[in-house]
Amino acid sequence: MARDAEQTVGRPNRLAVLLSMAMFVLVVDTSLMNVSISAVVRDLDTTASRVQSAIALEALVSAAFILIGGKVGDLIGRKRAYVLGLLGYAVGAVAMTVSQSLAPIVVCWALIGGIGASLLLPAMQSLIHGNFEGKAQTKVYAMVGAAAAIAAAVGPLIGGFITTFLSWRVGFALEAVIIAVVLSGIGLIRNVEYTGPRHIDLVGAVLSVVGMGGVVLGILVWQEGGDRVLALIGLGVLALAGLAYWLVRRKRADRPALLDPALFGSHLFRAGITGQLLQQITLGGVMIALPIYLQMVLEYNALEAGLSLAPLSLTMFGVALLAGRRAGKRRPAVIIRTGFLLLSLGTAALIPLVPRAGFGWQLLIPLAVAGAGLGLLVSQLNNYTLSPIEEERVSEAAAVNSAGGSFGLSFGLAFAGAIMLATLSLSFTTLADRSTVLDPGEKQEVAHALEHNAEVMTNEHLDTLLASKPPEVHDEIIRINTEARPIALQAALIIPLLAALLGLLNSFRMTRLPDPRPTSDDSNLLG
Image (cartoon, rainbow, N blue to C red; front, side, top):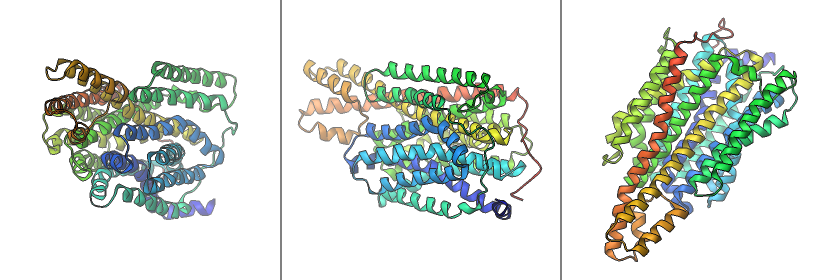
C-alpha cells in the first residue's frame, strides 16, 4: 500500500487524467445513444420509444442499485469496485458494437452497464476523496466535471460524424478501447480502505432498489402505455419512506445500516444532493427531447443533430474548465446559483422556439446559455457536496450523491419522455377529431393506434406507412403529425424547466449557508 501511495504522489496528473477518462466514458455512452436514435431504430428494426426505454432503463438500473454499489465498494474495496464498474461498461460497449437486435442491448448495455455505473460512480468519487486533498481535490473534482462536459460535447459531434459516415457501432467500440486504456493505469490508484462496520443491511438494500426503481419504472410503464402505473409509483414512494424509517430505526438501535442517516443532518449535504438531483433531471429532460426534435421533426441525420447540439455541449465544456480554474475566492453557492439561473433562462427560451425553428442552429443562443449554466454546475456541485465529508463516511456520501444524480437523470429521461408521448397522443387525437377530411372510422383508427403505441415519427416514415391511403387522407394525417409533434416536445421541455427553477430556489438556500470546509486542505497532490 505504501508503494501505491508513492506512485500516486509521484504521478498525480496521470491519475487525474485517467479518472477523468473514466467519467468521460460514463457520460459519452448515453450521449452516443441519444444522437444515434434514428440509426439504431433503422439498423435494429425497432422503434424510437423502445430505444428511449432502453436509455431510461440504463439510468434506472444505475439509480436503483447505486446505494448498494457504494456499500459493495466498502466491502470488496473501492478500487476493485471501480474496476468491476469499468468492466460492466465494457460489456455494454461490446454488446452495442456487435448486437443485431435490441434484446442483447437491453441485457448487456442497459442492465449490466447500469450495474457497472452503480459501482463505478461512488467508487470513483471515494477514490478522488482518498487520493487527493485540499486544493488538489477541488481541482480533480473540477477536472472530472469538465470530463463529463467534454463527453457531452464530443458525444453528439463525434458520435454524429461516426454514425453518419461509418456506423454508430464504431463509437461504442472506441468506448471499449478507452476503458482498456483506463484499466492499464489502475496501478496508480491507492485503494482507500473502509474502516466502518462490514455487515450487510439486506432490508435497506431491498428497500432502496424497490424505492428508486419503482418510481422510475412506473413512469417508464406509463411512457409505454402500460397499466398499474400509479401502483408502481406508489410502491416506490412507500419503499423510499420505508427506507428512511428503517435507516433511522437501525441508527437508534446502533446497528449497521445501508447508509448513515446522520449524513442528512448536514444542511450542506442536503442542499448539495438536491442541487445534483435537479441538475440531472434538467439534463435528462433536455437530452431526450432535443435529439428527438432534431431527428424526428427536422429529420436530421446523426451528424446534423450532433452539430445542432454543439452550442449546448461545447459551452458546457468551456465554462466547466474556466470555472474549475478561475473560481478563485468566489463562493461555490453563488456560482451554483448563477448556473441554475442560466440553465432556467436557456431552457425557458427553447420552449417557444421549438415550433418555429426551421433548422437546428436557430436554437444556438438558448442552448449556449443553458450549456453555460450546466458548465458552472458540473464544476462545483460534487466538490460542494463531498469535500466536507470525513473519510469513513465518504463512500456512503458518494453513493447518495451518485444516486441523486443517476435517479435524477433517469427520472428526467423517463418523465419528460412520458409527458411527450402522452401529449402527442392527446394532440393527435384532438386534431384528428377536429378534422373535416377524416371520416369517423378513420378517426377511431387513429385513436386506437395511439392508445397502443404513441410514437414520434418523421413525416417520411409516416409517408411510407400511409402509402395505401387515399391522397387526401394521407395529406391530412401528415398535417396533423406536423402540428402535433412540436406541441408534445414543448410539453416535454416543461419538465426540465421546472427542475431548473427548483434548483434555482435551492441555490438561494445554499447562499445562506456557510461555505463547505474540506476535511483536509494541507496537501496539494497536483502541485
